[in-house]
Amino acid sequence: MHLTLEFGGGLELLCESVKVHNVNVDVPKGADKLTMKDLLAWVRTNLIKERPEMFMKGESVRPGVLVLVNDCDWELSSQLDTTLEEKDVVVFISTLHGG
Amino acid sequence: MEADTKHKKPGTRLCCACNQRRAALKRPKTLEQICRECFYAVFEEEIHQVILENKLFKPGERIAIGASGGKDSTVLAYVLSELNRRHNYGLDLFLLSVDEGITGYRDDSLETVKRNELQYGLPLKIVSYKDLYGWTMDEIVKMIGLKNNCTFCGVFRRQALDRGAALLKVDKVATGHNADDIAETVLLNILRGDIARLSRCTSIITGEDGPIPRCKPFKYTYEKEIVMYAYFKKLDYFSTECIYSPNAYRGFAREFIKDLERIRPRAILDIIKSGEDFRIATSTKMPEQGTCERCGYISSQKWCKACVLLEGLNRGLPKLGIGRNQGLNSDAKEDIKKDGRTKSIESKQCGSLEF
Image (cartoon, rainbow over all chains, first blue to last red; front, side):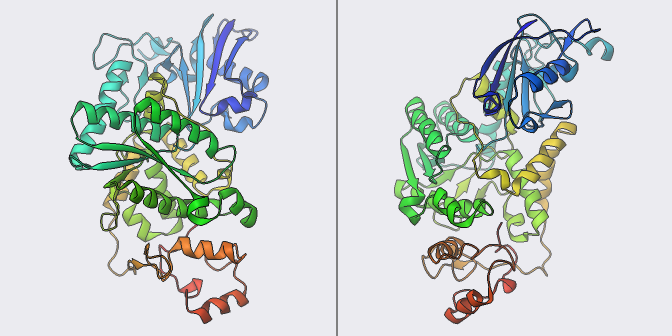
């Protein structure tokens, strides 16, 4: 499915300084929906070009990275289990830098 | 209900405050689900209450906002400006920036502060390490290597802020330190046994007995909320980690706090509360406050830290003033004893050593 991914708070540096990515992600085989968990794994493999530990820790994002799905905090839905739909916009913002 | 919400899409819950608009975020402070407009209102109102309850400002005061172009100081400048107008604090606000001379980091973030000056209509003053000390951070790192950079930078920055504040003739300096920062500092001081700092680091106003007091209006404000506020309001800020910071000790405390926040967000405020309520045993020896013999700045030793560090840089002794027993060879130690400037490192009181 087609998604728009945005990286902010310095995370764009991990994706060759590109902040907005229009991507096409396949639903994993055997699943009927694409979840955030799937998307994160996809991002790590396909978009993160350096220092993946700054973006992810284990299966989820590194603590300190905020995630918004269609401008809504993913803590309001089910975080990793949140399902995604065609044309969704996912924003990742790191808070881990000087203020 | 749990099974219902498991695969729920975000954007289908209502704000718990207004019950009309869809919730946009979950506040770590209260775990409430709240919409943007209510979030702006409660965010700004809480800071207003902190300012009132702690009597941070008086009408007619000139206030310098320590501005780095980063998320905290940008949001602070925006919110203080707004609250000053809305609630008639009667303050004269300024932006004060420190240029440490870090290529690719500070020069870019200063561009952001210059934009903030225009966007918020607040006059800007920039003070630089080069002018004040004769050294940029880049030059310092070339001399001392990649360890202890933050020690130099932190010490110099504090003085630089004071100098800048004096030039602006302000009554106070406001910085954007947030709840996460302060919780990290409490932990850091515990980990290092720095009792003197531990006793001071949760104070919302510091340096009242010095020339220019400082305050932290964001003391109880979560970093996540500052970033969300800036994101939704589309505030312009600079967001890259200082190139020298990956080696900083604070990184460990930060990682720990972030992991903790995930499990129990309230922990951040609770750590601050613990820090506020610490009482130092009367038998603990605490440093006495005096003034530096060389420059007159506030100091608990004969020479203030900045002077010790500068002396080290200018004499090609990068380890001078760093660590407890390392770095100084016996010749250098002899030199120091002869000149009577500083006692040996071992006899330093708690709170006078830095990383």
